[in-house]
Amino acid sequence: MRQRRSRAVYPGSFDPITNGHLDIIERGLKVFDEVIIAILSNPEKRPLFSVDERVAIIRETYRRNPRVKVDTFSGLLVDYAVKVKATVIVRGLRAISDFEFEFQMALMNRRLNPRIETVFMMPAESYSYISSRMVKEVFELGAPIDALVPKAALKRLREKKAHR
Ligand code: PNS
Image 1 (cartoon, rainbow, N blue to C red):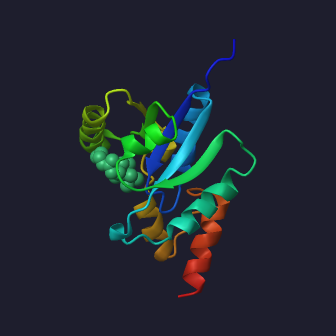
Image 2 (spheres, rainbow, N blue to C red):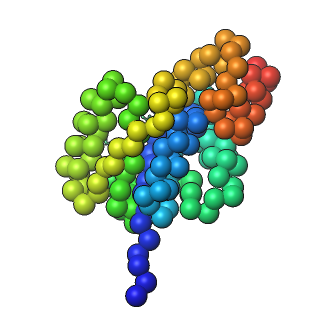
């Protein structure tokens, strides 16, 4: 009998993806057969990278891993999860400060669709302080961020800076 493959959605802004996100994806792959990185398409957030650029960075990062997919979504996350036949939402919890918002979001998503479970994963301690926002800020101010983001993100960040 063929077993159904388990599929999780890992949603976020990923502007850009960091090594902290990669850590969560690695952990997700230990539990689920497939992880779909779902980038929220929300122009109101005024991102540094366009959705297409963010997709390209992540595709490049995971080009050798067929168990990781990249996609974009707009509208409700739970509706997107149903559309792609995922039963789980993965979110990373770095610190207690993340908890309140994540808890609210998980309960709202459960209310919207009780069949979709949210699973929280903790990154390695060494990534607990990394956020896309802070990476962008320190890079802009000249600090090295080679150890904080994947190569494809670093390359795009450098290109953006050079073209300004
Ligand atoms: O990386 P982020 O910005 O913390 O990710 C937030 C995200 C994309 C997971 C969240 O904003 C989201 O799911 N938005 C889609 C709209 C939605 O479903 N809202 C209801 C749950 S709060």
